[in-house]
Image (cartoon, rainbow, N blue to C red; front, top):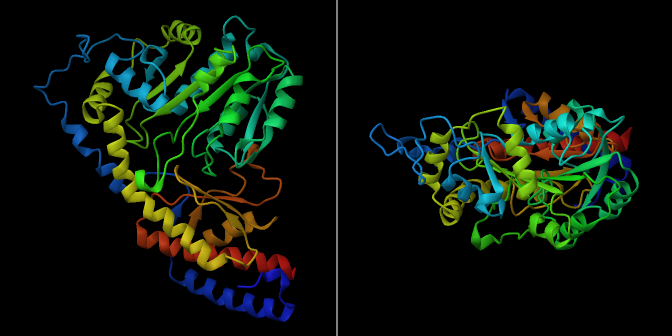
Length: 428
């Protein structure tokens, strides 16, 4: 298919009329399809239903250390849950604290402690005149919402195929002491599916920072979320903890992960891994916040998932469900848009999203058209701080929740809207 920009105006006008007719047909169907968030499908949630029967009334409810999981105590999590989360966090169990159901809460609490108390003796960030944060873009809207909620100034960092632009990161972190941290989704990033290269990880760990208390918030949300199983290949990520220790910056990082998209998003477990000094300080602060998190849920997860091998086997089942959906999305984009100049996209090997870059100045229009036709997508701009995409280009596609037949229809609508918005811009 020839690129639209190279076609005569008369052909573009004819194509636009045909697309308007197609769009009207979709509107007439009264569709109600939702691809707004990266939620697991019902079939994925069904995989973990046996976990609910593991702790019956006659079950042994003691941890391996003999703690009664029905009662108070064990602030940092039962030992076997620490080992399970260590397998996800690529760390040692003694460097892990097991928390509640959401790693997002863990990140919020960690940031709040830095704002209120500082970290390892530094001045509380909230007492400073201004705090700045590095935000690789496109990125995760909830990360950006969190830093905005704390009044932190966010600075865009472009992403490339290796991860964040490290020249920009090193420049800003190296010369401005108000820059206190960076958001990272290092494996199968949200939304682009990028895995940071070894060089990027090492540069993050070793770079000179004007702020001694600079912190890397390493949200390894998709660390085991491979889309195509062993046969489809899996990305490898260098451990930021090991890289920071090698660079003599052992306290620079906090690693976060959870089972939210492994078992039940509303009833999983999460964990933080950090240096011994950071963990000790975290536990000291937490002692006034809670007596301990849900140990029955920790025990339930351990007995269901068991260990790293059990996690891998469970995630193969997830990949069998959602991998075909991602293939469908990319096939639809290829069949409908290849060669038109209407956008670009990547085929990820893991994670929960497909990142689509529409022609500049059309993303908001595409999302609005799709919504008009009954397909709800993530708002254009959501993948940038303050909801402001300077190019009005990036759109996050979330294929996991809809059944395959609905996803197929939704992608047909999306392709139609992309073409229509592009032609409107070319003919304006």
